[in-house]
Length: 125
Image (tube, rainbow, N blue to C red; front, top):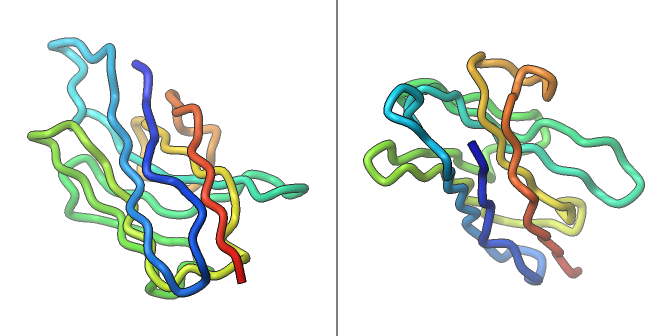
C-alpha cells in the first residue's frame, strides 16, 4: 500500500488548507476501511509528531493538544480518501505533513505500517 498526500502549500496566518491522502495498491482483502488513518508532521529541526487520527469507520477521532479545535480529520471510505482540514493556521504549523495507515487506533508512529511522502505546509506571519 502506498499513500499519496496532497493539498499543502504556502498560506498566510489565519488561512485554511485541506490535506488529502489517497492510497494505492489496495487489494480485495485489504481495503481502505481496513486501516486507521493518521496524520503526523515534522517541523524543521524537530521530531515527527502526531497530529490526528481517525478510526476505520470514522466514528472516533483523536487530536494532539496543539490542534486546539483548529483541525478536523475525516475520511470517505467510498472514495478511499482521508482528509485533514486545517483552519486558523499559525506559523508554528509549518511542517511537512504525512498521512499514515495502520491497524491500531494509536498515536505512536511505530504502529502505522504505511506512510505517504509528505506534503509541505508553510504558514507565513
